Image 1 (cartoon, rainbow, N blue to C red):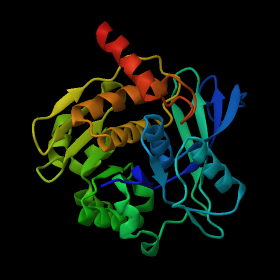
Image 2: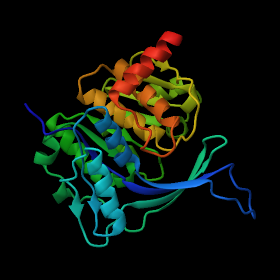
Image 3: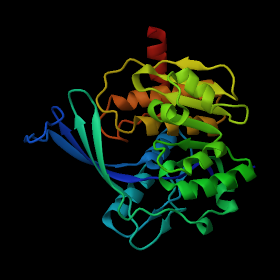
Length: 307
């Protein structure tokens, strides 16, 4: 059956105003801004751009308004090839607005954000026909109610669900976890949820025969993963010169989802997602450094040969 989209995403889109400093400022000091830029961001937004750059047909379903930030978000996504026809327009809605402070010395970042005006799609916005048009459903924790509803529809239709969860503050997170086929979480969240102390133990606790794959990411340490509760495998991070880690996790998720939709094996999806995140880290901004598939293939030839 022909599908309209490879990856359909529900979750956060953001407008990021990035401020680059020589180093992170101490309290009660004045620090000059070395450079600044505005980019689209957000967990789902950046993941979908990553999927699109890898050649996947991506689409976004969220709630936006008629303000400057909403127009910027839609224009940025469409420019990247992300279909925004599923976007729901409602008065007073707007994307997340973030100010991101980036240390040029280390590449580390601090993100200050406002959720004012952020709205979730409602059940009437999430039809069987909509979900049935995608090969992979992507959701993040910022629209938990919509994610739960969309994941239920996806399960009923046999559409695999990939999730990006960065917060465990909402108790309903634990209702979403069983609905996720491909769970990719950072090591801090995995530790909080499982209580385990090693990445491999975290994977084992979150994995199982009913989950296609669980991946625990740990930045420069790489990631650990298991399929269907099987053996835990480790894939190391690539040695790159880090400029900006903003968006690296989102890029990993989007690249993984794209590979899954394109029929790649999990091992290959993890390798490509790790490379995509590594390449992105060598560029400033959340989206500007996201690589294409040809760039990733060349990167892998160079780095795997060097290893």
